[in-house]
Length: 166
Ligand SMILES: [Zn+2]
Image (cartoon, rainbow, N blue to C red; front, side):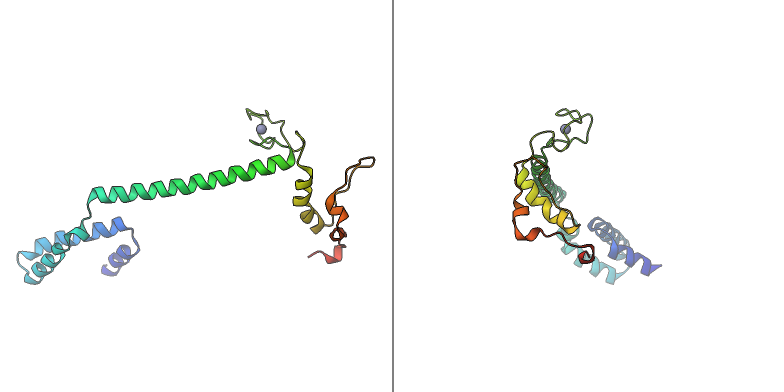
């Protein structure tokens, strides 16, 4: 069915389009021997031959450059993810490679969970307090501890009631 062929060509990739154009050229070449209109159309299409049959080296170069760009974007995303996990590990005092979640971790053998090292307490509290406040929890120093927690000193630490929770 001809509409199906059109749909496939319209929804396909650039490579599909190249295949369709090549097939069209073959058909026109066969018909041009006995069909003057096909001959004219073939001559017109062959005049645009550079467009119809791109230089394979150019195609490979474009694909290679696209792959390099994709690779660079993935590297940047990986660097950003590593920086974020290292930041969280530092705040928690956890293993920067696995947060203590991997028994086979070469750095901590799975013993590097939160508190394995001294956490960055002030940054940790600053980061967590809003989430805890949202569910009606607050961080308080243990009895006998001389530590003060900055959010507790601020006026924004009132514990919301259940009715205020969304
Ligand atoms: Zn680890």
